[in-house]
Image (cartoon, rainbow, N blue to C red):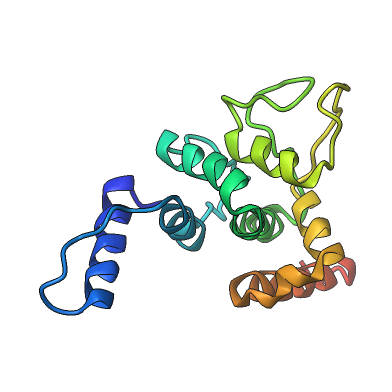
Length: 173
């Protein structure tokens, strides 16, 4: 995963190029930061990856975007989480718990992106104990909310997941 500074430099460079020569670097917006994080997120495929150590600035950007642009927030969170689920299938042929620390709910500090995703999707009632949050859950969300498949990156991940699931079902693992 790229550092925040690397993402800021990349985003700033793209922004300046888009403005033409002589452009000054604009402020990196929450949307730019979230988009860069989601598109560059590459979970480990050698062992069950977890979405941990999310930079505070990225978590804050997703939280801000949830209020200012919920559809973009949902799209980029869905991309991050389907990439994570794909990595679980490629690594170990199954889903895993999404939470990074044992909890009866969703810990906003330990799992900030899962917290924001749940606040958008309302998949889990925050006032009740949650036994298990499968990494397949966001994939199921995307299948039901097919407008998310309009995003080429999400569509690509879903296609790969479907092929991997078919291989697993056929015993070709």
